[in-house]
Image (tube, rainbow, N blue to C red; front, side, top):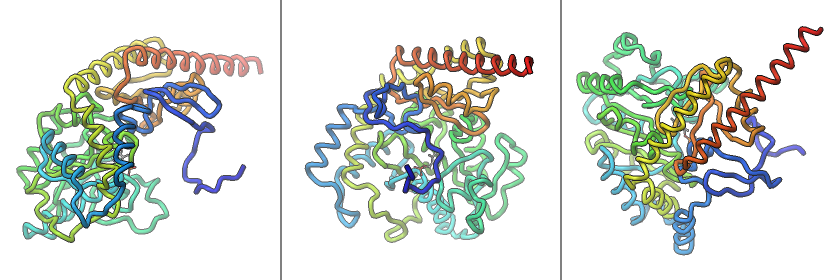
Length: 402
Ligand SMILES: *Cc1c(COP(=O)(O)O)cnc(C)c1O
């Protein structure tokens, strides 16, 4: 069958019909344990009754009104996000890239409003991923994504991950902000050590730069805190979020202090769909669950259990697994074979995991996973490793025989 979809994705030959908690059922009726969570989106898993109710209740009232009018559900969601974070103001979007675009525009506008329009440049880090719009691609700086799409948007200076000297050297009179993911997601689950995040905060304060965090993947409870930067005890000036906040509904946001947002006055930014009543109701319902203190504590506990069991798995399969890294339910397995091989073997064991940069396999399950599911995921990974080992030894034997 020829597909009429633009062929930009390398899709697995697998479709799902329904989901329940951390489990997905394929159109063929097979059950899969989902430790990819639709790329960290299905924060409350599938068919969560509280989300279904919120969506259905709102769907029966009003879906969309535009931002020409007040949206009470949005006022409420923004207030709750600000109460729970460093932020004073929120702009709602439909995706992570749009949340990043708003963050980038806001940082530039802040410097401009302060009389420094020349400070439009933003320092970013190698291995970063900030989205697929032209500006966020330039921020991410990945050649393979930029190639063929014309001149790269100007204003982004990339430095190697973890290189303090290069970072300081990259700051010029045109620098206005530093942008970083507290834990790189697509880049291969690479956490920025807490002391480095604190160092970045101090550096930004010293040089009058804004600190911008991209918590699109690592935020919304993923690491056992509401936001990953909380582990370091510091806060950014601006932060982009998305993925988990919608629990599967397209929703993102740019959060900021009132000071950092001071250039964003009437008419400077907008979105037709952003913050519509349907999205806002779902976002509020996601927060109802995630902001319960016991919920975040359980994520930290499940994350620790998963990390310990993965470390044991690494001991059993040293030829396949080189390192386990990450925080909470955002863990990465550094593969010693091509990571796609491990992802495919896991899928054959009916466990869904996701490849990332640096030859890593990502485990980013729904945040509602319980102990039996964590143990089952590790059991299936163990079986997947066994599959690869058997296939490799068969190949070695065949090679010897020939
Ligand atoms: C997924 C992601 C984005 C982009 O989000 P989209 O919703 O795909 O636009 C940006 N930053 C990070 C860290 C992400 O993981």
